[in-house]
Image 1 (spheres, rainbow, N blue to C red):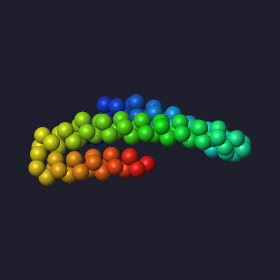
Image 2: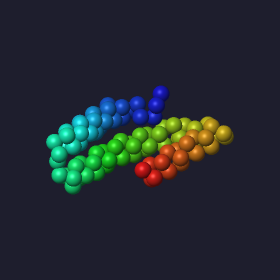
Image 3: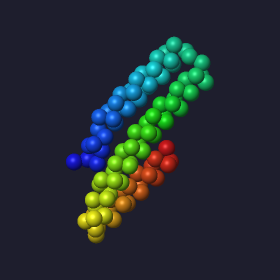
Length: 93
């Protein structure tokens, strides 16, 4: 079971809001909205997605990685590396 199971409803709700924001961005471009206004909304949408990513990461560390650390060995090493790689991707984005 995924680590985010307990937060699934909150994640789905956040993603639905992001979906609405993206549709709003599309509408803004279709309506030739001023560039800076569109960029402001892009920034807000990006922040909303980052908040989803952080919640997923927190759940992954607290559940998947923590369980793997209790198991130890190669499983733990793989999960820690996986989490580290995910953080690196988030930092680069």
